[in-house]
Picture 1 (cartoon, rainbow, N blue to C red):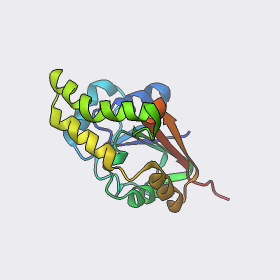
Picture 2 (picture 1 turned 135 degrees about the vertical axis):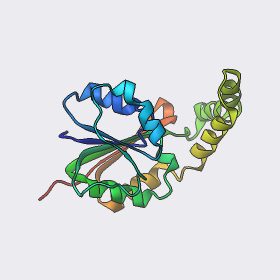
Picture 3 (picture 1 turned 60 degrees about the vertical axis):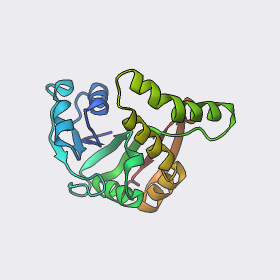
Picture 4 (picture 1 turned 180 degrees about the horizontal axis):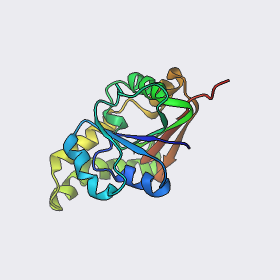
Length: 187
């Protein structure tokens, strides 16, 4: 895809760094609500620092058609309005541009679903605390995944905004998913 790429909720830059390795000649813009997190990414992106934006992802401060692709890693469940996010992304994409969002999810049913839900709710926060992490942060993560309106709701919001080729790819038995779509090319 022609750039630039926009990495939403870019935080400490892990996804932006991976994009930079895969597309070394493409500009990568990063957006996050936290300027401090954006600064933490600077060592990972040495020599590849394109402008960073401190802004809300549901109100992108970009001109229409400015981006070739928009990515987001592990923040879709924190979006207040899926409709506003998708509308904002479609406005910022050029015709033929893509969205690709990855986030955690809960496996639906079956033995894997039951095992994963038990681990995710009961074990993960405790293990994180034992390893020096903040148990409350992991409990918040569990609540945010469980409170997500759902992947089909996100896909429907993308379609209503005008995305085509909307797909949901299940990873790790449904413990993570990727939502992708494309802005229609010009006729």
